[in-house]
Length: 71
Image (cartoon, rainbow, N blue to C red; front, side):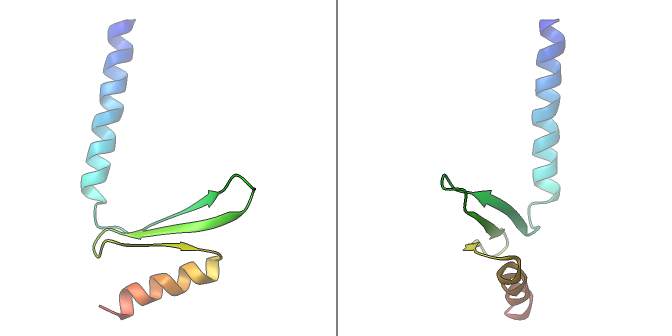
């Protein structure tokens, strides 16, 4: 059983690494909640290295548009 669990864990790590390599240049956007229950958005562009904390989906869309139009 322990060997099976170790292989499963190793496989998950490997799959995560492969996913990272394939998607290394893709824009990443995710939602975050702070300790007070406020929700905001975090965006990261691995190509430029830029990241931002944004307060709304509209701000996220604007940030993404700037990424493509300001190259």
